[in-house]
Image (cartoon, rainbow, N blue to C red; front, top):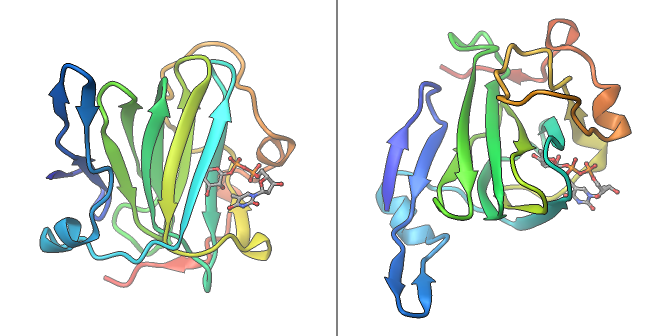
Length: 184
Ligand SMILES: Cc1cn([C@H]2C[C@H](O)[C@@H](COP(=O)(O)OP(=O)(O)O[C@H]3O[C@@H](C)C(=O)[C@@H](O)[C@H]3O)O2)c(=O)[nH]c1=O
């Protein structure tokens, strides 16, 4: 299990080993005890899986507010995507800063995003699937979004993003009153 810190404290890049042979590969995509031994202790309770048909599909930037805030462990099940986390903890020295990673089926990389961060992604290939673990259950009353193009993120694509109606109407970061506070 190879774990690397990113420029945002708490957001980590995880690269589980892949054991290749003539059939393909085997990989433990999540192992609670191995992650705990590296200091990453999160009780995940829900797995999500979505398919995005076209390149340039953007889902995000999303969060669930307390008491149903979610940490997420994100990977790409098919295709390729650029996955992003944005710090929205009021008072954080890195408030409003973002980090992004290319997650592809081929590279097997995973991004760990703690509660208190926005999460979103853009697809780089057609028929891209994302798979992620969440530390709390879906709670629609706590569901929130910030406009994807209001955080200064370099999404690395040209053209028009395909968005849900909800995401198209989301407030800009500058107008957003975050429910999260940095704990130090
Ligand atoms: C997120 C979620 C949605 N749904 C339902 C609600 C709705 O009818 C349908 C589609 O929901 P959405 O449009 O919110 O799906 P989507 O835009 O893919 O939302 C997801 O985006 C990524 C970036 C995240 O980080 C996730 O937490 C989640 O917010 O699925 C659930 O039943 N359970 C869930 O956990």
